[in-house]
Length: 88
Length: 96
Image 1: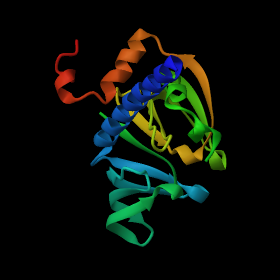
Image 2: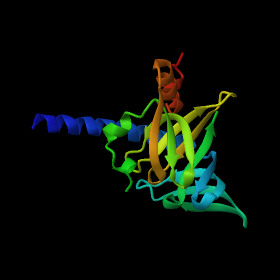
Image 3: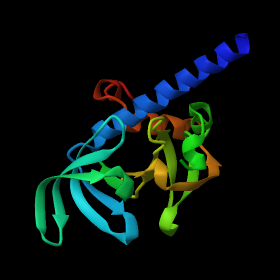
């Protein structure tokens, strides 16, 4: 009925607005030094590159590991709890 | 999937422009103003204003979110401030 159509339209509008702001956020993160908080209290620093559409992995550059700096790496989203970066 | 990931976009939208405390797995906690929630991953994007006029952005991944508590509503000034954070450059040029 009409209610279902209204509900669907509202949900699609909300979804589009939320996603658009999220994608702008990813664009803002690109190239910025970012700290990733991984499982088991592990924290790593890297330069944010990109995220894939399905939120499976983050591509990062200059990942700092105890074994040295990895020029390019993928962090699995399932291993990441959170990440943060600064905007100026 | 956790309860937070199962919410609808309309539910997530009610958190936007609000100051929240996010309880994540492994006893992590995050506080900040909600900029958005990614409808694909349910990741929540938080902004914190620092003293040096920089903005710190924290993203808590949807799979790690356990509970989101609303601490404060944003007023019109805060909503506008938040809307400028990720705004495209051309719209910033016309901001007062």
